[in-house]
Image 1 (cartoon, rainbow, N blue to C red):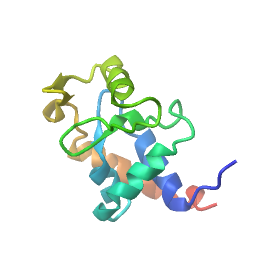
Image 2: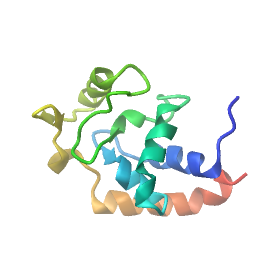
Image 3: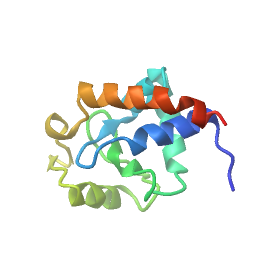
Image 4: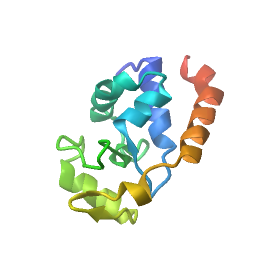
Length: 123
């Protein structure tokens, strides 16, 4: 079983809190980690996601709403199908971010949840 750092666990915990029908960008997840420059690290961690059933990494897209070409479970078409199954709409081949991006309230709720569970992630 792979060993995950506290940061990796925190990334997975943040992604687990993205509501169905919503998406977050890699930069938003990085910002939740306290460093918006970690977006590539976030992508690498999500690419190694051990379970999409537990951690819905399909809900993380780039800042413009495009799906990942290297989506861990089969590529951008699989990611798109998973998002569409949650009623996420697409415009010009990318997520309609005006409708489906997490809101500031969502972001703050995720941040608060992460602060509450951080002691459990450090074990």
